[in-house]
Amino acid sequence: LWVIVVLCHHPLLVLTGVHGDRLTVLQAPEFVSFQKGDWPVSGETIPDLVALTMGFSVKEDLSWPGLKAGPLFQRPRANVLVVVRGVDSLALPQSVASYPLENPVPFTMDSVAETVHSLFAEDTPVVLQLAPSEERLYMLGKANAVFEDLPVTLQQIRARLSQDGSVLASLPLNSLSRNAEADLLFLSEVQVLHDITALLQRHRHLAKDHSPDLYSLELSGLEELSRLYGQDSPQYRDATAILASVLQKFGEDVYALYGNNAVVEVVTVKSFEAPLTRKSRSILESKQISNPGSPYNLAYKYNFHYAVVFNIVLWLMITLALAVIAISYNLWNMDPGYDSIIYRMTNQKIRMD
Image (tube, rainbow, N blue to C red; front, side, top):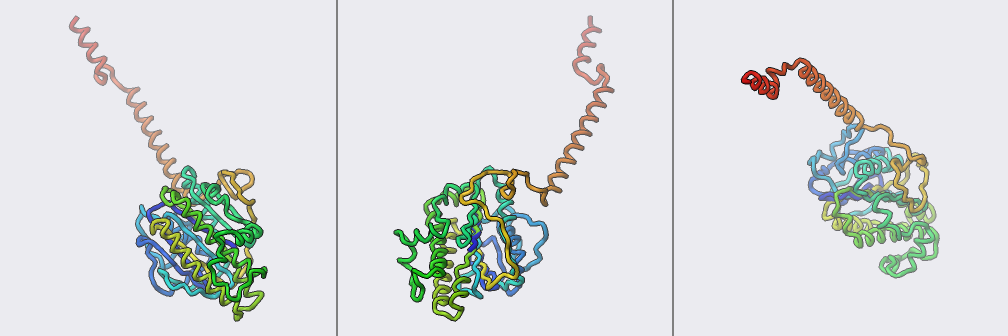
């Protein structure tokens, strides 16, 4: 299970979803304009699509007609991306738009997280990347304080299922068992979604600052149920119905918490075309380094902003150099008697005397 959630502290929040070889936008502010249609979107371009909805630039133009250019000075306050593996489609009744997903290769939100961290480092935005099934967690900025108590390991999450406020008390389990390993993995992922919403409700101030937040989540519980019971089993059908309902409510709750100014994406793919190898980060990592992906605290590599910064510095230096040369030349050739009011007045006084 791998989940990516992005929170942006801006007037609006966008909720987008990709499920079962489709990309479904659950919620979106009006200024993030998704067009209704069946234009296919490639899985490898989803990080760029998320970046564009948040108002960031991308290295290569995304020639996809499903998203129209929005206002320059408006961006969502948060972006939440949920990847669901092991299902062709989910019955999400309310959505902004839905698009076919082609070339479903594994992807990460690392590039978007790097952009958020580099542009809003002083504002300490929330960056949370969580994969419960792999016990992988990466937090940055305010996420370290807000999600410090979030259960991470499978043992912690399963212990959370037996505590007060557990989703087991409200979910219609039907054919799902509280004792089966695969069933508990799926229920643990549902519990994580519930706890994230509860923590955000407790820390509503996150939705009011000026830095964007990013959340990334990947859920693989349905994939395990499909592998164990089969897609025609009652356990798989009950779990699919539960997850669709939970994701719909999760998107609505996050959208409301950010003042209808957030993006929530749900990606549902039956299987990825290639395995994703990814180096896990330590649990509750809190190091504030310039490059969170490097253990040596190295600076970021030059990115697409380099050309802009280089030209600004270059021409500013050239302009200042020319100004210094021009001023120096005029001072050197200045006639004190005619060009300086001090010498002019002194000469007049001498003549009078």
